[in-house]
Image (cartoon, rainbow, N blue to C red; front, side, top):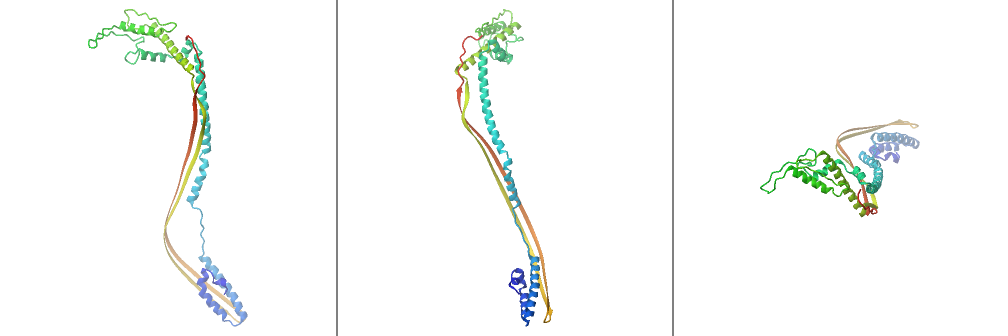
Length: 339
């Protein structure tokens, strides 16, 4: 037999049979018959080796694990996290905030100039409300119960003398006159200060007096506001000016992939191989046949477990750093009486 018939794992098991065949062929005296028998047996035995090899052979292919492929797919999703949109929004929001702050400063300064150019009555109508007047009266002239004594339904009571403190007796009329004098003093700087006439037999303000009081106090509040605005304008209204700054946008992500396999296996295997050769012929011809048989019994048990884990963490950071300085608008001096 040729060398190709005695190579490989299957041919190794057929080697004893091949040696017998080779000896039988070598015993043929006629050279021509010996060569013909060798070619026939070579073809038969070679086919048997290929058949048996096909029964026993097998291949196994390996590829990327499902966990690894899933991790790679998760990493590819970074572009879907909205990082570009986040960065664009950070820039747009910062720019809009700076512009909005600048506009508010200009609007505040414009309102200051406009308010200072108004007359007292115009400023009072726009900036002093009834609620402000009531709150002022409650703070300056309280009734002891959270309200004010300068109201239509309030009656000043008589207070008896207190020997423990030495306080003298005080009538309701006396208390009313004290409050009236305080209101007149408070409005004496106005062009038309209050003049309240209080009789000796009354203990409460009249309705027309309350109207005059509230109107006069509204002017007092308006004058006080205008004086504060004038002081602010003389000093120069403060404003914030942006010098420079920087924006930082950062994206970090981390993907962890874990794949664990555990296997327990027990296996029983029994193989049986048989082969037979028969040949007959005369001087001019030769007929040969080879019977090959291979059987394999395999029993195996296997316990297999697998664990796949994929974790992905993402962090988007936006940071704004702005350097600014304070300045003042050009001072505005407004003098003269408030009329």
